[in-house]
Length: 265
Ligand SMILES: C[S@@+](CC[C@H](N)C(=O)[O-])C[C@H]1O[C@@H](n2cnc3c(N)ncnc32)[C@H](O)[C@@H]1O
Image 1: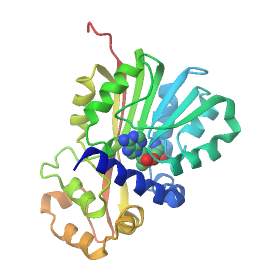
Image 2: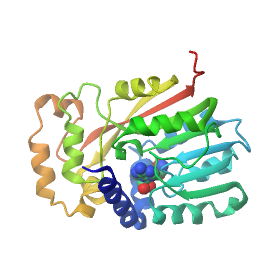
Image 3: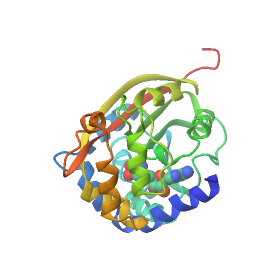
Image 4: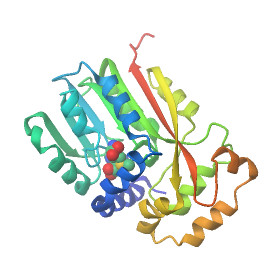
């Protein structure tokens, strides 16, 4: 699909989803089977010490990560997103800190900043929307200062998912998605873009079919039968890898902390 057409679909999806986004995320991130606190603590820990330093979040969304960062780390925070509606949520949420942040409509593949500006870039739950993650990583690397920190977090495939079940599932539910990566693929991509990985962890969590339909399928008029058919078509191995049962499946959230390396290394 043409990149510009795809981005329009992503933007429209988020503009519509904005009104539901925060309660949907509470369900996945803050539920007993969720992983939000762990991810947030890792991000805050990785950026500790960057008080008043410029930090960019690419795909800032509604400011779910930006707000606690402003509260705990107190950086000078810049949030960039394709969707105006999501940025409006972030603006409202972070308004308490209005001297300390900027929010910008923009595209992860064409960052509107000069080189070597930021001490850290975070990209949380956004990379799988990017059809050309290499372009974004090149931009991230250029925009970061030397030894700048990159924090990546996203849903990833199971390391042994060789048929691409997770991509097939997502394509059944949404036209916004571009590609999921395996944790090892993502690590390699970062290393190919001048990043040295300092920490990596994969966090499993449960997701119900009901919330997959609510978070994604309903915005694309997907019928429950289509999801059912996709699940029915899984192999025995895929059912094991993703612990698929009649209510839902286990997904994997990968967090990677990396440092921009000097050119010579
Ligand atoms: C799942 S949300 C994550 C938001 C936030 N990081 C969080 O964790 O709540 C993904 C966000 O990425 C944004 N996005 C998707 N593609 C983008 C692109 N090419 N450039 C900038 N933002 C993009 C979407 O508009 C959406 O707000």
